[in-house]
Image (cartoon, rainbow, N blue to C red):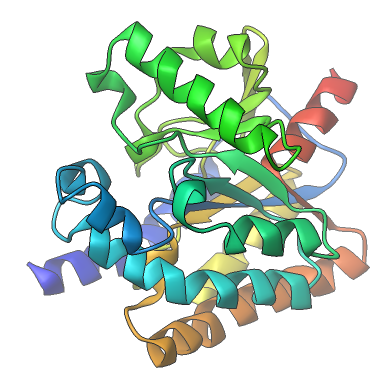
Length: 285
């Protein structure tokens, strides 16, 4: 099973590259666009203790909420430092309940010299498709109340497990954009408006076996066709130990984003967050 998952992860960028190479699009930007979003599913191991293991399967199909939180607790400072060092803005979708037990991540983002987009990843990280209208309304209300303590009104939303639902409630709470559902058959290099909301659609999930060279080739397609390339990942994708996290950043993230930075200098591509991409589309439209 492990080898099968690794093979699938390694083949995914190649499959995406081949699809995008021949895919036609109805939109065309001024230049290429690279958008990065980070899903903070837990953020701290204390949430696993607080929820007594009852929320485990809402977060991950195979490991506990405590374990996910422990990994993300180690990985997130490295990730924020990386994007700050490269001067690349990203969307960090924070789970609201995290702020009950740990405010270090949101404080780091607020202190950052880079204008990161602090979005929402719901409050409890439960599948919205399994919740009632009132349950979702309550989750979004809790997020608003919690974020308001930090003088933040989140405008970007990332659905837990990418299960899109209740877009009308996102509008009610002032969101402007979300990331739609994606997989090999549904990913795309586009941004589409639904009602008042923009779907900053996912283009590629950065998994454990993603190849940096293929990522560069898709960046080239974004530049050539002047399309948005939206990559995303979870902090727990980078490995369980500090050393494996550093190694993953150095082997995939560094070469990929260094390459994109050289293209930014020549004006061929722009780095955007989900909300800044939505704002650009609004102006363009």
